[in-house]
Image 1 (cartoon, rainbow, N blue to C red):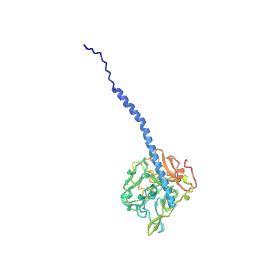
Image 2: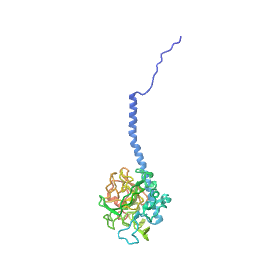
Image 3: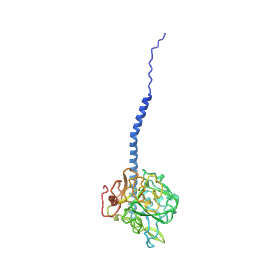
Length: 339
């Protein structure tokens, strides 16, 4: 006869209460980790943006070494110019000119500086480089806008700062948009529609400014108003060469707030201004002066490359007098880039 002792069987497992506790703990951990992950991602995007600006500054400096002058923002005659300077105004921009120094000479060679932007093939107008895009806002594959301003002639519009800027209309098209603009200066030359205003050739007091063209048979062949290292009398380390352009949230790819950076029609397509009445934008949805202001999608700061090649993050709360001195190449008031 076999005898079997009593067997005690224990079963392990989660009760419903225990399962709910585990889920709650996991949820808390995710909640704690998510801000850290987002912060790390933003830090990485800001670092890449800084690297982009450094590349642009170096490219501009190499352009200067080769051409003995900074690249012109665009061709733009002054009202009343004589025939040697009265041509141009619809060609391409400084960002195309520096492509060879960003290892993209093959892209630059497809552009013709003597013909209007819109006369280039769509494939040329929509090519771009990652260095032209801040990753906090977009990637190069997303950097195509549709529908430029429609109309003919030039319309002057008045911004809340009191600035009057010319806006040229053009047929609907596609083109590259981007995030970095050249420093055109401040608005002290004027912004009321006169021939002396900042937007006309040679009048900007920044580093990458609109220039009159040297015209041959009515066609632009070179640029006349040349800004050199020696022109930056406030010091290369105290003067911005390029920085982040404000583009309102919800307006990516939409003109005029996010315009074609290779189109020289309008001064705000590829440059920005700073100074009194022209602060760095804090409200990412602001459309007030956004056509001509600096601004970024980084929290609390906007990044700039200075003419000495350094890149610095500047608080969006910087006072406008100091910002203006950073933008004006020769106002006689040099300041520390740490101010």
